[in-house]
Image (cartoon, rainbow, N blue to C red):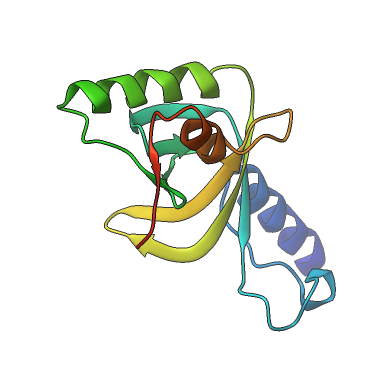
Length: 129
């Protein structure tokens, strides 16, 4: 009975998008920083470098976009909306936060990193901090 309850609890945590640490046996390198994966559609685009996936605000760590109240910021926000609307994202969270956001990177269903796309297009700069 306890085992069944534990498995049900794990299923609920997994389905709800809660971040669970990966077992040590699944980590590629023991010295690598712990990362959490979140997969799902973007439910909200805050601006050019912050989105929400499964209710988790994610600051795209490799991006430095203009503020949303500027022309360049509005352009970055709209481009992010265009990029993320075509399917679920796979986001790797670094395990640290910035204000109310997790820091991480996200890839489109085809594997392309959305931050790298915005940098290559000149919409945003690479974060150097």
